[in-house]
Image (tube, rainbow, N blue to C red):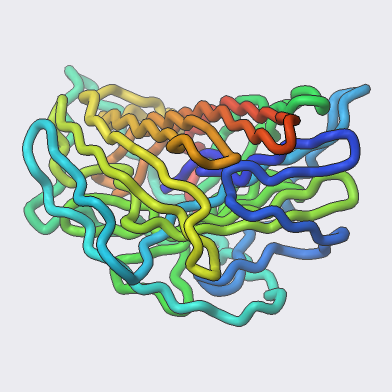
Length: 345
């Protein structure tokens, strides 16, 4: 599943500093070569050479990444509430940390792309809802997305995202049986990781990490969510809504921020994927960071979920973040639309 750039590690650039917004971590590394390394999910997987990000003339180059939610062990966070009908709550998940050192690149195996879903010849039939056992896991492999959108930061300007993004779905060390790793490569300067849990009551973001290069510096950040944030409920019924409160935690277990979120099933809508029509379920997730943190922000993500693939085939994400420290503030905004273009097992 994918979060176009997901709960990204937002980069805010000042005259001589780069602040990682929303990630809850501020740290600098000098230029880093090769794929990023995250504490969960094993080695980062890429599919072929990533696109090169170029800046608009006269605009300083910036790249934003996502810091993500993960399920962690520990006390159960406030229970979620159902406003239409109650679904089961997410069970806590334990993720095992891997080696902290840099990791080598895993490339996805290539092969023939699967036959696209046939285009209906008559009236669009409703997409089936998941069965009583919940949502299954999507196929592992490389998903290529068509991208349209921009990102911008104060004192930096705005630039377009590359027009293609690859998402490699794979297993990894320390994962639970219901988890998969999604490694997203937007460019050679922007990569993200999501660890996604496919449970009886829905699809959850358990972990997100991001690696962003800005000029000569690369920043890597990651966060666990306790409890995980619901992305797609198993009970796909128009109007179904669930909400919750999640704490984002760093490697040391400290809470970097607290988020309120609400997930709503809007209904069904046809989406064109690779020339075929998919009758998808439209789900919206709205998130907001609670006051009391130097980092503040809102994120709205709309997904078109295909039960046949156990994956969304389109997403639109709008993010606004800001940080205020010592009387000085930075802002970051992004707006991205991603549509699935192809799949290679």
